[in-house]
Image 1 (tube, rainbow, N blue to C red):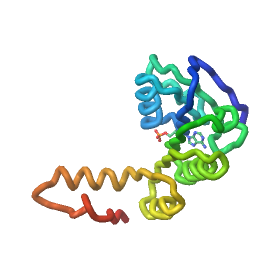
Image 2: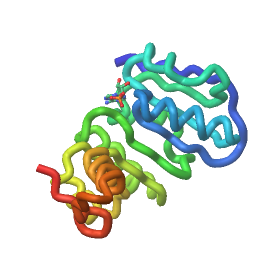
Image 3: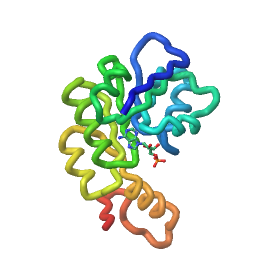
Length: 158
Ligand code: AMP
């Protein structure tokens, strides 16, 4: 896939790279950009960048976030944090592992849809967020009369 880098505004200092400009990725990128962070956001579909807020001042990179040429275009070696938010667990894990192991980036977060795989990747030192687990915990908070017992304990989502 052809890699296309569109620069809107670039400041000095470390970057936060976000892989996946979906609903969450675009929202996070726009919010970080609005508070003055340097953001590079990658998506394989150029049209996805339309979800960014009009005031987004970061850099967009079109391409597959698991490809080295795309990560190089995003200057991953200069990143201070990498957040993998595509809709594919495998992609998010691959991006997170590359960031952690090849580029020694300390702050790496991956969204993992499958709760059963989440623990495995936490063992590799990758911070993970699992929407199903987070939702279960929020539901538990909203049902005080029916405590699910998930707020402290491990969440078991089948
Ligand atoms: P959402 O499901 O709304 O969180 O969107 C996920 C986003 O991840 C979509 O915009 C996809 O195009 C994007 N995406 C999925 N796989 C990749 C990939 N390998 N590289 C870059 N972006 C991806």
